[in-house]
Length: 546
Image (cartoon, rainbow, N blue to C red; front, side, top):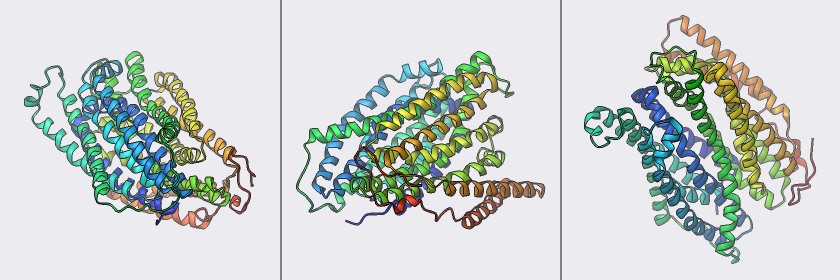
């Protein structure tokens, strides 16, 4: 069986994630232009309420199935890997069906509790079926990822993006253009933007259906790549128990991750409703909280999430490699793959954060040209989010690596700590500095999460990290930002258009970044721990190398 190494597998996933994210931008940006700040608040409300349910039933499944599959293959138990797949499909299809039902039945209660009205309830109901289809899709992705075959996941991500753009924008635009006719069928909803938001979010559901159908096709027509190996198989009850042990903590940590979006929704709307906002925008006082939150969630957080969604693939790529190294007690492979994953995430995240920070007005003006009032709110908030973006990008592979060495519950505990910091920060800072306070607390939250994750992974894996590599990346990122800022100022004074300014600034900044990075040698430097031959025991004790 041909397997992809960490770098190849991660590259495949990151490229597909970049394509999917570009398609997501093609979806989200026109959607924001169609719905405006208030309409996006309905969309974001539904998405924020849906994501914890989706994360609990879906996010943990993929990594849990991937770990058990990788573990079985490392031990030559190919028949057991197949049984893991079938058991997971039976178990989590039922879980997904229950998650969809709960989301649909409680849609009005969710909407009323979060925003004080039921206008967003239709959007919540429209997205509820994707929990079921997402469960099936995640089991299939985890199975192939555990075999170190990232192509099925990559293709399914692109299919999701294409269907979401095509279906979501078509449905939203159709409702917007035929609002009077559509309103007749929804007498309980008074705002046409709520129906348009629901139509747009239906595209998300249809995208999960499309990806699930893709896995059905390759299941029917694909070749059986697992044959031979040991005949030993686990009982279904044992498999189900181990899947739950791995999936539940990971799912809960993903829920906690998505709780930050819910915290923003509750605290931004609640604090601005109670304490007001110094922001001057052309909306009524009653619409101000929804407008500010919708702008922050639909614009600032959309840009914020672009890069982490790509580096998240590094966690998927490294999980089977770390699992195999841990099972075989191979400290050299464990150290090398760990350093490669962390350096790769930093190489992507650091220049992106610096660049977005210095070019925030130009980026938002180019992406959201019709939403000048909304982007004005988000420029400073986006800059304040960038330190948190870097920390989140590096934390993703750390969470996967902790799970790979059998510490699946630690990310959950770490995320709970981060969420408490996020909530306290929002409550304290939003009344003082409005929506910028939500951005500051987000960065603080993810900084703490990264620091604690690094400390615990080093402790339990027995490896140590070479800090010089990361210092070189930060220096190169700063040089990238400085050159991009200078080029932006020069081209704007020359009267160049928005696209030209961005293109030249990013191009020059990128060239400077890779040139400085090459001089520093950060991209080739490995941890000295890779030379250590002694391997950690099952409790994570090993020799720490400096």
